[in-house]
Length: 153
Image 1 (tube, rainbow, N blue to C red):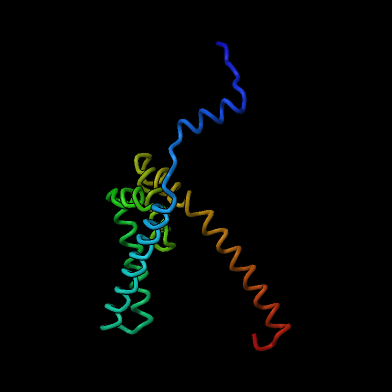
Image 2 (tube, rainbow, N blue to C red):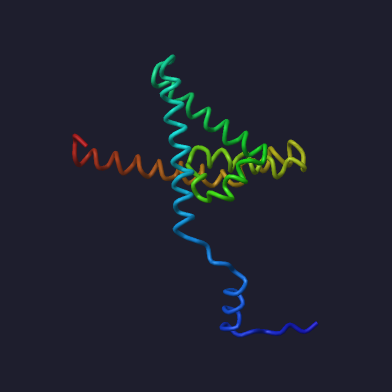
């Protein structure tokens, strides 16, 4: 078997021919509208829940509802279809994180509950959790240090 090497210029031309240009402005508008719709839903849920519950409880219930909806839509295969058309707009942190965890669980379900779902459920979300914890520790140290220098900060 002989492998023919191509020059960088030829490779670049082939890549440009094979890849399609995406409409950046349209994609940004779609992402903005989708992310905004998720945020509006969250605000509407907070207002609705706060009519019958204390505000802090309403906010917590809103988070739980958005996480549930993100995971449920992922499990039903709907979240991926929405994300296909709206791109990064569906990655609003709370629903995007729920999607990341649920999609890993769905993807590895065929390997069983222990070695599939249990072992792989945080394969995408695990590094996010780890780096968020690290960032929060660093932020806490900086906040404490600045508070020692500037007492009323």
